[in-house]
Amino acid sequence: MHNTKVVVLDRALVRRAATAATLVSISLIASALVGCGFADQLLEVESPSRVLAENLEGPGAAGLLVRSAIGDFECAFGGFIVAAGLHGDELMDSQQNQVIYKSVDRRTTTGEEGAGAAGGRLATATCNDNETLPGIYTTLQTARFQADDAARKLEGWTDAQVAGRQALLATVSAYAGYALLLLAESYCSLAIDVGPEITRPQAFAEAEGRFTEALTAAQASGDQSLRNLALVGRARARLDLAVVGGSVVSPSKLAEAGADAQQVAAGFVRHATFAATPDRRKNVVFNANNVAQTATIQAPFRNVTDQGEPDPRARVVDTGQPGSDNLTPLWTQTKYSSLDASIPIARWAEAQLIRAEAQGGSVAVGVINALHSAVGLRPFPGGTEAEIRQHVIDERGRELFLEGQHLGDKLRYGIPFRPPAGTPYPGGGTYGSTTCLPLPLQERQNNPNL
Image 1 (cartoon, rainbow, N blue to C red):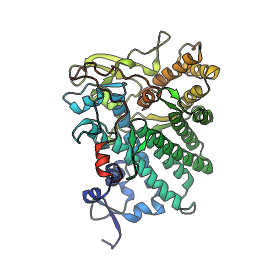
Image 2 (cartoon, helix red, strand yellow):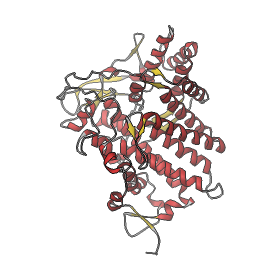
Image 3 (cartoon, rainbow, N blue to C red):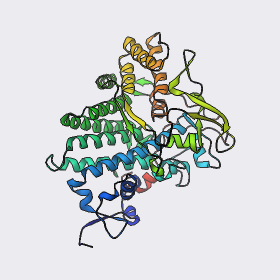
Image 4 (cartoon, rainbow, N blue to C red):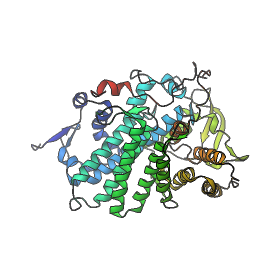
């Protein structure tokens, strides 16, 4: 082997770093590249745990780094939808003998639990664990770290060194923004790269900054699809900053969110892509609900109607059979039809609903009716401003069903968790009072700045 500098990706390196989330990100780089199908682009080395540093640090690796960041985000995104859906009332556990899974579903997770309990599993589970209980914290921090790292490298290279550099920079900046958004829409607080604990508003502001960087690079590249992606993401981050617990705390941010959303091109959609193999590439929603039957659709999303008519956007099926626990009634979703079905990350309909909330009145009614017309629902007649706003919130639950939005909406709008705390849980115990997820114990133990 040539005398070449290498990056060692092993447990010893992991133990020497300061924060669990960032460290798992580093230790997973090699497996992420292989899982995304990019192993053939790495120089061959003697040790399977080593990757030549120049392959990851030079401008020739730009495309590889960006594709790896996207792959990490897509895997995290699918798992997030299931884990957040269990906690946020879209899904219900139907898995046999999985106390950890049920703890998430009944909202009794805490940040102080060990690695074998639900809080720890949500914190430390990787994409390779999506077959059991998908994680949130480490998977999204991995995606965020990878995207931020790629962005830093791209900012240090020139257009002459990297073809399409601005488009690549826009891509990773946007994906970093989305990873931060999902973290802040689920956790009460978080930390970034061994930094101090930050609040949800601070994290949303970080995400807003990533999307602004993505928008600048997208405009420089002339890529309209990336521009739309950045606009939807920034509109969502600004909406999160504007509305807290059902109250508008920043009218200016709400107006900015609406202005961003209004610029999104009709028909725009950016998908996360999936495949039947390997496991980390599966559509986790379809796998958990339709294949493994470890999660069923929760009661609020069964038989959803609009003005007395079935709403096709949240159409689910009562199979008449129990889930894998042979007890819980199995209701299955119809939005995703296979293990390789794609899932929207951002789309025009979401932007329109943000615009509707920001502008209200006749604009909101027009947005709702355009969405209704697209799926064959009768027009919404309108009403008072409060009634219109409530219908916009209801529309979000249906239009964005199983797209990773509902838990964030519950926290943003102060939507009560159902059943309420103290209600007997079918799998034993009672429903808890956890809403946003506490900062994981693993982060506190490994981050010297906490």
